[in-house]
Image 1: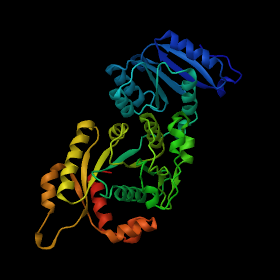
Image 2 (image 1 turned 135 degrees about the vertical axis):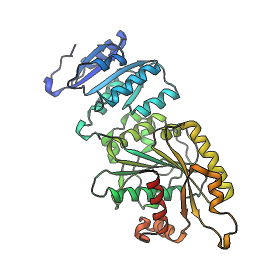
Image 3 (image 1 turned 90 degrees about the vertical axis):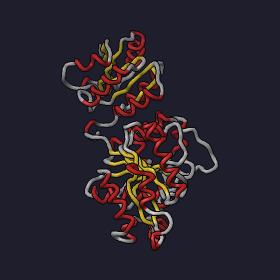
Image 4 (image 1 turned 30 degrees about the vertical axis):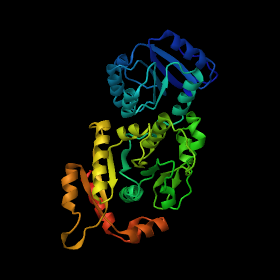
Amino acid sequence: MTQKSMLRPDQQRDVLLVTQDVELTERLRSGFNEKNHFAFRSLKGTVIEIEGLASGSSPAVLIIDLKTAMAEDLAALERAKRARFSKTPIIAVTSYLDQEIVRRLVQIKIDDWLPKESGFVEIYKSCERLARVPVVDRRVREAVVYSFFPAAGGAGNTTLAIQTAFTLAQNKRQQEAAVCLVDLNFQDGSVADYLDLAPSFKLEELANAPGRLDCQLLQVMLTRHASGISVLAAPRLPAKYLEISEGLIGTVLGLLSQNFDYLVIDLPKNWYPWTDNVIWGSNHVYVVTNFTVPALKHARYVVDAIKGKAANEAPVSVIVNKHRERLFGTGLMKKDAEALLRDWLAGFVPDTPDVVQEAINRGLPMSEISPGGKVERALERILVKSKI
């Protein structure tokens, strides 16, 4: 049953609720009847039954009650998201939510999820936010995500993440919104400093009100580098702890994924509650380490830890950075790292401190400091090997 509204039917956005919960249906119908922008409809059934809906125009927003989110419901939701409702924003509401369910919802790339007991205003704001993103602006495919995780401080994680973004941007130079570099090191991240940019991501404002974030606001918080890449970085918070929810990080990366071809993520070395979700949502995870015996051993421990969490979801490999061998074959050798890391080894990046330092000081790609340099060539080989 459609609500009455002062808008003509062709001006309203259609919201469809799929649920067996009569109380939830009446609560949302009552709320939407007081609004002017949406036409509310409900379907009594489960997520499994929406696969049998007649083809035709899709709603502007689809709200699905997953109840306790059983495995078969999540499987049906994934099929619907990939086929019948691939271009429809979907809000999942559940009466139970644990880490495994969050993981599956991130993998399925659901647009938003809320507790079933959420008030109408919260659900309405989510519908309003998602409906503001025109269907024509949604990418047919999601972004490819590459995450860089430092095995320890000083490994050069940020430098390699930045150079990767530059490398991808060179291949996408004719396209807008191709590459976004994301600094998730909120305590002491240095991506903006390395690129001589002013960070614009207002993290403190959003931490207490993540519902404010939408695609339009996020675009305002991006900074554009002269090379064409976009950068999402927050001002540093070196002496302040800020609670960052998994939901906020998931929303940020979800919105970015809809608007870019590639995301390159610079992760902090400490593990946070939201780190799992970033790892699960990545297409490839690079662990970056120095060329020393303790560093190589620690990198292997980190790979094992990530593989234990990510299972086979995201390929994980190690980049040995700042590689330099002594003359006459003495000391630590490449073959030692290869024996320790085996199939987890992505490749070696040579130690060129002068080029790296000048690039950082000038906020430029290393290719502009030393065209066709050793670092650039080594990293390109690694990316090609990973089929970027």
